[in-house]
Image 1 (tube, rainbow over the protein chains, first blue to last red):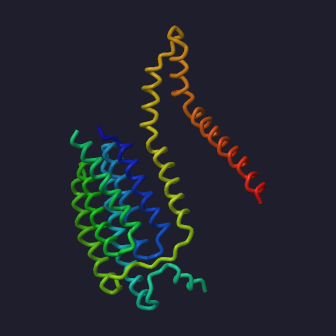
Image 2: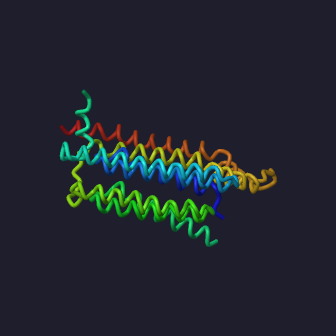
Length: 100
Length: 174
């Protein structure tokens, strides 16, 4: 029998994998991929909680999160391409020059 | 039964794919395994009776987000390996593992309490049974944490004793 805790533990593990990528990678695109993983982990937790509580609100929240993630990717990818045109690199260390 | 099997199957696949995403140096591999992980996450939504969200997950993530990344990659040079400066590579892994342990302990507390509760019921501490059995039950249920801490303390003492003992002999040789 799969309970709510199973789903929550799975989503915690997935979130940790995303966090590991966020901390370890230096490439901006890889950081974006890691955020996608983390957002999906939270979505799974929301939907599992909604299922356990016999409630639909969690699914609605997850749906909004998918929309926000898509918007974030669109804006972020545009900025990344601009940055790559300007600096020929996607390394996060080049962002250090934003320090004024 | 089938639900349990599907849960573990997709959990292993999703975690594996996510791990490939965060560890590979090739950006194309990372993108394709991200798409695979998104599809596998939608399987959880179907398992949880959220069919609409499952379809949206496949459509939006695999159909839009990953394709957007693919188009973005046309502007970037995606075929070459990603060169990254390595800085203290162990710290992120340690932090992530620590967070995973804490989160699993927090969210998995129902499992643990259920396990402890069933153990407590089976304990049935009547003093008529043999003392060894009683001590075994109590030591491994009620005082399990203290037992583990004691074991760890013994290990630390052993290693510390060996380290402090071994430090002297090379200096004597010199």
